[in-house]
Length: 240
Image 1 (cartoon, rainbow, N blue to C red):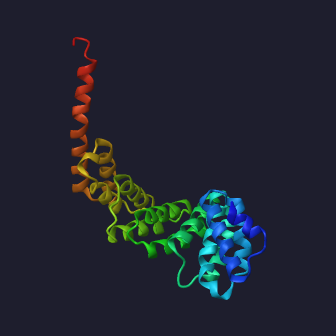
Image 2 (image 1 turned 120 degrees about the horizontal axis):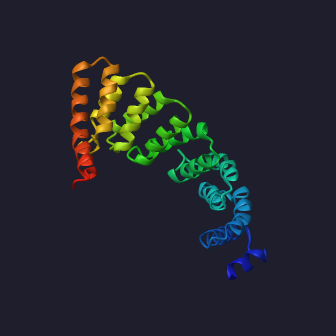
């Protein structure tokens, strides 16, 4: 590579040399030569000419990217404070995403919480961040925070899947709030209202001492079970 020979010759001077080395590092990164790119990025980051100061943020971001691609999670996190030190304004989604990915790989659930909150501030309509934050609270055994996260996501206009709605119901049930748990199960779409789900609702309504709702749910559960039972008996009938 001609540019690499020019850089390694040490013939280039001052800002021109710095910019050419930066170009080489970028080309190596694009080419997937992450270790080689890092050999140039680190000296660049530590000796940025004054007239190139506006590039310092991007250089540290690329250092994080190179370490991430090499699955060097600890080094990604070690580079983040240097990135943050030179960033103008708030950290970018790209930098926060790299930090989050490294934290999750290292199972740093507690540290991932503020990172996810920062990502939600950037992208409040991105369901991925809400889902990961709620899941993070579940891992940390913080059910109230997980419930609050799902509720806030819903208010933000995020559509929860049936599985996520069931999760909220289970969290409420575990927290001793059966009425709210039953309400979330009751709000599931019609195709999700099978006999087992209706029986769960009925049991929760009973725990909440909401007798009319419990009776109604038990009745619906029996109606759902009867066709299944009938079909099973017919298929098992030796006379057929």
